[in-house]
Image 1 (spheres, rainbow, N blue to C red):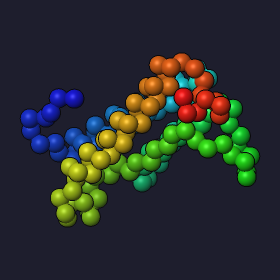
Image 2 (image 1 turned 135 degrees about the horizontal axis):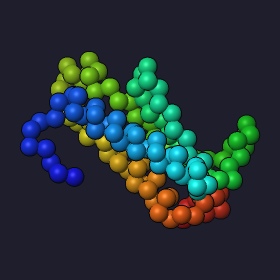
Image 3 (image 1 turned 180 degrees about the vertical axis):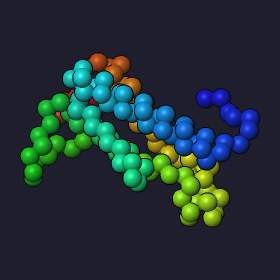
Length: 125
């Protein structure tokens, strides 16, 4: 990624995070549609939070015997939070959130590129 020559504003940072969230949504849809895994994605607009997880295709969802997920993400997007603004932490919080999103997107990309269903027997592969 090319470094910005001007400091990013809060609006710029939020735009970058939301664009990455769109990528998570699209990859989850692609993975699920191709039958590679059960990829869940939820955005809670009132608190600006993205949650996503990936389950094997042969997952059990029954209470007490649920299959463990293979990947999970939870990110809050509001960088104008008063606590961070008071301390000047916006840039650090942005970089942390972007790194989490980048890592998760890389894993979703890996599932797509591998093009084999994720099952409980090959979760570690």
